[in-house]
Length: 613
Image 1 (cartoon, one colour):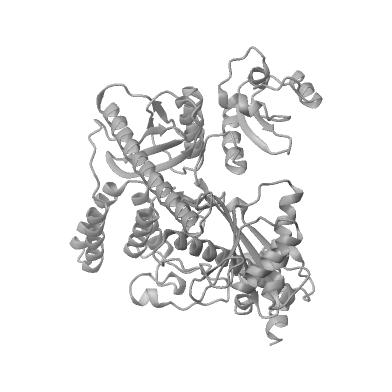
Image 2 (tube, helix red, strand yellow; image 1 turned 120 degrees about the vertical axis):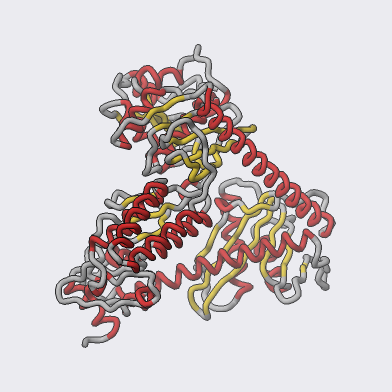
């Protein structure tokens, strides 16, 4: 419900709201942004949340009850506020905003068209670097197949060489040239114009213009044949054959050849899934699907608004027409925003009859089918998880199921870089925001017992200080020694009733307190599978952190004594080259391409790492 008494600072801000368009951010008492919204008139929109007579849905009432502060960002117009909202939601992922699930992980194909001889790469983020992007692709497998086909078919270089070569620099062709996967532009064996033809063809295919490209290749093949250039004619023929074989798609009769996206959404409770059918030149070239994080109170209109804002914010290639299952909250604003992004008019419609309506129903059928598959998978996973937890309860003869389980592990490389890890499982599933890692402070060396005592002590001391729930079960990686160390530390802190067990690696033996012999759990038991999964996850998390600690120490010791290398430049070098060994093998001119590294400093670095000359 709306709080009866608002903080004075918030009341003051509400009294002085501007009437201009912009974005508003609601914050809780921890200062965390919990909701981001846009408005044509900030004063009118924001005040509706705090009117006692307002009719707010349950989700909004829960959200407003947590608001203690408000931050505004004024824009020149409503379109700018829409763009800013999409950017901020993507950056901060507020609790009460509808957002794409795991949207940061969808891959794109990037073509460095700002270069004389462009390269193709697979990336996970868009950047304003002058390159051309295609995606996002929800099927990484199909995307990589397309990527491999196009680079091979049009001989797109895979190297990272700077082309044309800098003055005085010479390159030699690599194996790709000899097996006909590259035209050899590094040695001048392929002109920039010829290479550009291949890049143009790749862009046409990725843009859904494969049929037009095939027509152009056919004309080029016929001309080459007439001019007796049979080698070029054969190349064109092979490209046509490969494209026709790879680009067979379901042809859709939409009445006219228009590039369009067909969108629909299916939902059930807290689960929602959006489908985008991409039609280019009347051909269905792809189907993208995205999971959405929603609440039962969210309206269909709100879900559609959120999806459109986030999807097209990351979609570099817009169609001429977008067909929606129902109207967005502001169709004119949406069309204006898409027009600004595309540079040309984008028609936004909600077809009710005819072929376009059939396409929307097709998208809806796909969305419902995919959502049903997702729900079945989740139910299956939950049933399997419940079986594991119940099995563990039975095997350990517990009075209640151990729903909250933590597992501790120690990782070291000899006497140094000793670290610990703690992973947290809830109802048999990892809860990664509760994972913790530890640098061993008081001790170093290979005394696993004392190191185990330290990390368990620090973890449970923090639980007590923050008055948080203790786990139902503690698992330590090891046998009797590690178990005894854990129990001693817990008893010293007053956690005398905490259930603890040790899981030894050698024979997967389970050690319990006050029992001399290990407990034998059948290898096929779901309980043992859960314990092993916990132990292996804790081990992975510990090793991963240990590797980070070692890398940081190694880089620091190798580069810190070089005059002119500070923390910022050290980070840039690590980010670009990954390790000191790679820096050693890198020519000075390549090092000098790193931001902040001059040619003189690059030579100093190599002299320090490898010795002068």
